[in-house]
Length: 523
Image 1 (cartoon, rainbow, N blue to C red):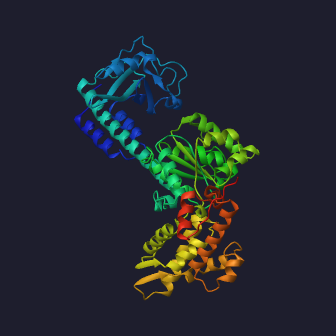
Image 2: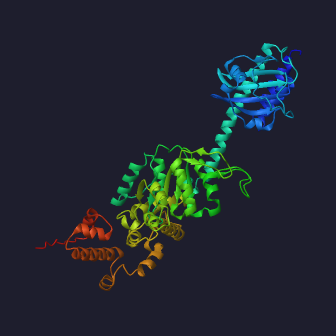
Image 3: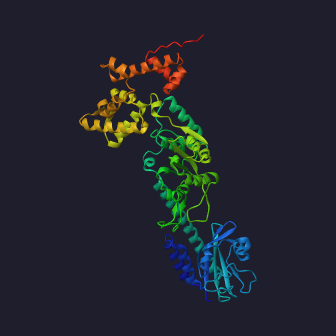
C-alpha cells in the first residue's frame, strides 16, 4: 500500500476540527480515518483505568458498543495500552482477538487478517485506543510509522477536545435541568432571611445553626404558613452543600401514578408518554439538598420506595435495570403531627424515624412575641421595592392592629395583608412623598377582630368604648394576664405556659403593663 499524502492528513485534521461540535463527532472521526486507511472495521475506545469502553465503531455488530473490555483479559489491548507507539500485530499472531465473533455479517471468528492499534495520548495521558482491522492480510504493513504517529496525534487531540466538549455539554444540560426544577420562589428570594428576635425565633435559629453543618436528615415541623421552606433554604445555605443544588418537591402535588418517575426518573419508553429520558428529583439534587415539602401527604405505597432510598442511597429509574448511587441530603417538612400519624397507621413509623433524625419545630406567629413589627417592616420594604415606590412606612395604629390579631395563617397571612394594605395606601396617596400605611388600609383585620370573641372581651368593650386600639389591647392583655396569674396563684412559669410564651417575656410585658401579683404560699 502506498504511503498517505500530507494533503490527506491536513484534510483529516481540518475536517475533524470542524466537526467537534456535532453530535456525531466520534463517527466523523472514524469516517475520516477510513478515508485515509482502508479497513473493514474501526473502533474508538476510551480508557477508564483497567477498562476500555467502545464509544464509536464501524464494521462490528452493534452490541459491541455495550461491551466493556477489561484490559487484563485481552492481551492485544494490554500491549496497546502499554505502548506509546502504533502497534501492528502479525497476521498469524496467536494472541486472541477481542473482536472475535463481532465482525458484522460474519458468525465465525475473524480469519487471518490485518490488525493494528493506535494508542491515543494527550499530554502523556492515555485517553483511549483506535483499532483497525481488515480481512486482507498485511494491509497495514506499508504505512510509514511517522504517518501513523501523526494520525494518532490528530485523533488523540480530537478525542480529548470532543470529550471535554461532551463533558461541558452534559454539565450544562444537567445545570439547566436543575435550574428548571428550582422553585420560582427559591430563585426570587434565594435563601431569604429569618426575621425575628423573639425567644421562640432565637431558639429556632440556634437549632438551625446546630443542624445545618451536619449531614443529618432534618424534619421541619410547623403550622401552614410559618415559613418551613425558608427554614429549609436556610439549612441548605448554611451547610457544606451550599454550592450544590437545592431541589424542591411538593409531595402533595405528585400524581400517585407518576411519583416514582418524578422522584427517581425514567428512561424513554418506560411507560406511555415517556418520549425521552428524564432525570428524577433525587438525581437532580446530587451533591446538594432535596427538600420534600408536605411529606405527610405522600401515599403509603410511595413511602416504602422513599424509605429504600434513604436507607441505601440507591435509586433506579423507571424502566432501567441499572442502579445509581446519589449523594443527597434530605430536608422534609410537614404541617401534620407525623408521630401521631405513624402511631395511627397513616404514615410508616420506620420512614418517620428516618426523617426525624433532627426535628426542628417552627413556631407559630402568635407565639413570637414582638416579632410582628419586624416582619411588617420587612414586608413593607419588599413591597416598596417590588412596586418601585418611594418612601413607604407603616403607622403605629396599623402596627397595633397587626399585633392584636391572632394570625391563624401565620407569617404568610401577614405578608399578604401587609402587601394588600401597602397597595391600597400607595393607590390612595399617589401625590405624597412619604406614603403611610394606616389601620384603615388593613380594614379586613378590623372585621376579623370585631368578630373575634376572644378580643377584646365584653368587659373591656363595655368599659372602654373610647380607648385607642393600643389602649384596648393593653387593657385586654392586662386583664388576661392578671386573671391567669391569679388562677395559677402567682406562678409566673405556669401562666407563661398557658399563654404560649416564656417567663422572661411575660415578666417584661407585665412590667410594661404595671401588673403586680404576689405569689401565694400554701401552709
